[in-house]
Length: 154
Image (cartoon, rainbow, N blue to C red; front, side, top):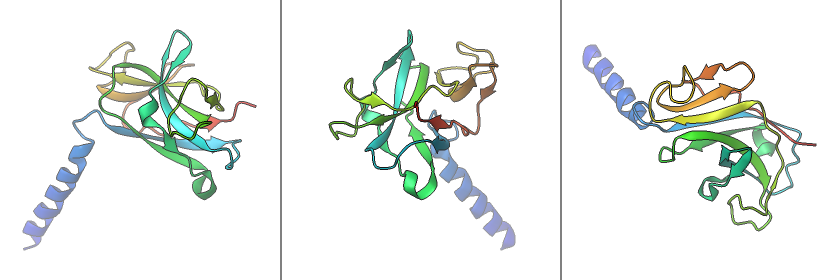
């Protein structure tokens, strides 16, 4: 009975992890520093190409700074490979999407989110799926995508 219970538990854990393990989905998290909670703030995943943000307006998420001072952002699995950043913006027209008229309130944190279709894509050490790259020293985070802290650009 004990062995059957252990196998059932392991099977449940394996099945529940199928949504992340073996796919390109991931979650990134970090702290928010210097933002006021009454500014209609949102997070958005944006492409970064030729020093310009490229909007992906479908992925905005509300920041609840009052409760935690941090955030967790679900990264999509069906995006083009490339370099991305997570930004904090003021949703001026309240459409829950980053638009060209919205003001970016966060500054670059020195890290990039890399979405790779295969290992060692663009940078050595990058793994298939989502990665965080420290732009200063080239270190790559591939498993736990945390410490992607965002600071207000004041």
